[in-house]
Each structure stands twice: as structure tokens, then as C-alpha cells.
Image (cartoon, rainbow, N blue to C red; front, side, top):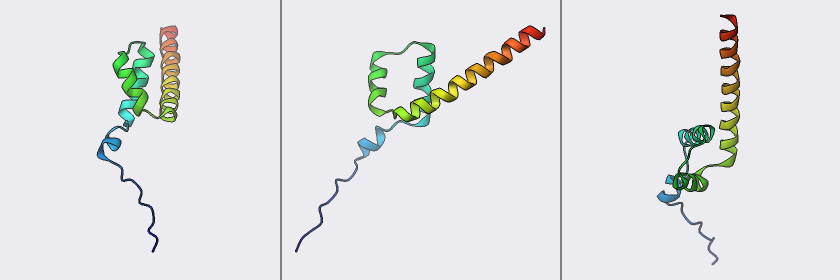
Length: 78
């Protein structure tokens, strides 16, 4: 009788190592600001998904550009 190979069960530690959307937003915000602890950076390398970082950064750039355009229009209109 052959038995099917068992898959290793995911541990709670591996689930806890996944970053939330808020963690990704914080990492992108710190990148915009330009200040980041090396230990926090190393921790983020292990748990952040690169595609999530790109998506959040793209949205952040769009929001930043729109905010600048609105600020310039407000200042120029005054």
C-alpha cells in the first residue's frame, strides 16, 4: 500500500512573518522620507513582497504628484 507524501504544515511563525498592507505602506513611507534603520530594513527584506512594494509605491507617487499639483495651483491662484 502506497501512502501519499505528506505536505509540511505551515507553522504559525511563517504566517507571522508575512507583512501586512500597513507594514508595506510604512516601509514605502520611510523610503520616501529617506531615513531607515538597517535592522528594520533587513527585517522588511525578509517579509515584504516586492510586488506589493511596487504597487504601494506607485500609488504613493501618484498621490504625491497630485498633492504637489494642487499645492502649486493653490499658491499660483493666490
